[in-house]
Amino acid sequence: MAATRYRRFLKLCEEWPLDQTKKGRDLGSFIRQRVAQGFREGESTQYPRLRNTSFTGVTVEECRMVLATDNMKQIEEMKKGMWKKLREKFTGKPEDVPKECV
Image 1 (cartoon, one colour):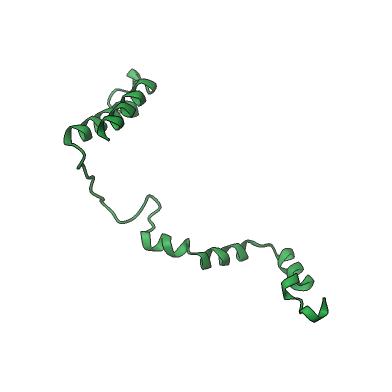
Image 2 (cartoon, helix red, strand yellow):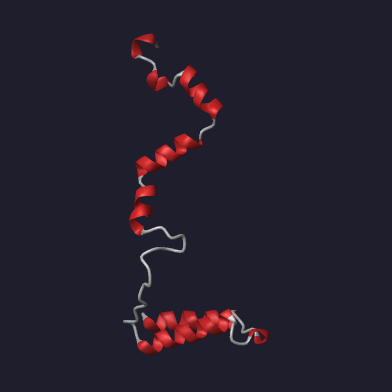
């Protein structure tokens, strides 16, 4: 497993050249250093989480709540325009029409 990851890392290094004009702040150089450090430490490398949020500042629980199916339906309903809501209200959907009327 580690050998495969290391080969992928070497391939990435070949495709991502170093930018000599950005000494000390080159992303390619930083990635090489961090990955090399991780391989030296072995498979059990764990990076501690400093915060319980993502870059948005939203916690995992808040993400789950927002992405729940019920909430997604409410959001979609809120996105509908006024004309579409009125049209749905007055035209009636086929499932809203009683069977004896059809």
